[in-house]
Length: 371
Image 1 (spheres, one colour):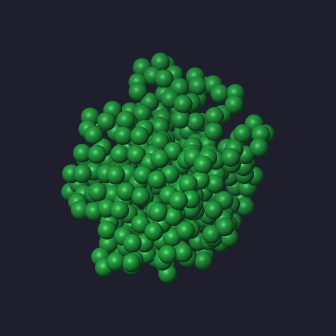
Image 2: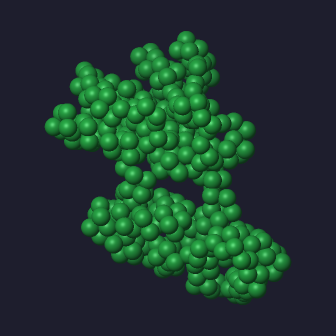
């Protein structure tokens, strides 16, 4: 345990994402590294993989401070010098949760999303929670790219796989979203159409007995996000309930979760992810897969804004929350698992840390005593 705590503390003390003194990026937390030397990085990773016991910290240090395109360059240089595939080498050197996170970083955002969707519908049963998050939170542009990559990776159409693994209105909604027919935002505000859609949502749900789900699906899958934001605001003039309350009253199960996810993302997507992270880290055990999925998939997209929303929601930073969970987990969980959450911590950072090993060890001890 002392060895594990020391490694976690050392890693936390070394975590940093350097941006060359520039201001923080607007949305991503992982950006292109300056003074990038792929050959040097490849050599360091080769040494780390060959080290007895594997030097996980060096692997993490490099791969969390490089953009996806730079990671691919490192992999190319690795193969040139070692005549071996770097991803295969990483698979052989790592295991468990840490392996899953590192291999996730070796995919593009679209490839990672496609893999997560495939994993949610592969085998017996469906992981509806993951499927809903991945499909309902992605923009039309992201879904178009995910579909292209999905076919490239798995030689199958995403629509067919989703259709074969879901049913009823839930399937209809997901398929409508996957078709990516959403309107582009317009500079012209069509107040008449906003009113028509708001009234249509009300008349298809709260106003009548039973729910005209098809109308809800059409409007929520085809209208632009700025338009829908105005529709939901106008909706309140027709209905005694807001859109989220109406959804809860009208539909249940996976369909309810899907519509709610859509509305939350239309209103504030980064707040939706912040809520997901907050819920995943509540209680005695964190949903490590949820934390990993959000951090890895959004670190080059909008994790900076997610961090801001997380702090508003919890009055403490995402860094502080993951750090505490990591230190707590290191007491009772395998090192690779606690280290994988530490890796998520690294991906979520944008400022250098200057915490000493001794101060973190003291913090670790205090947290352990509080268990």
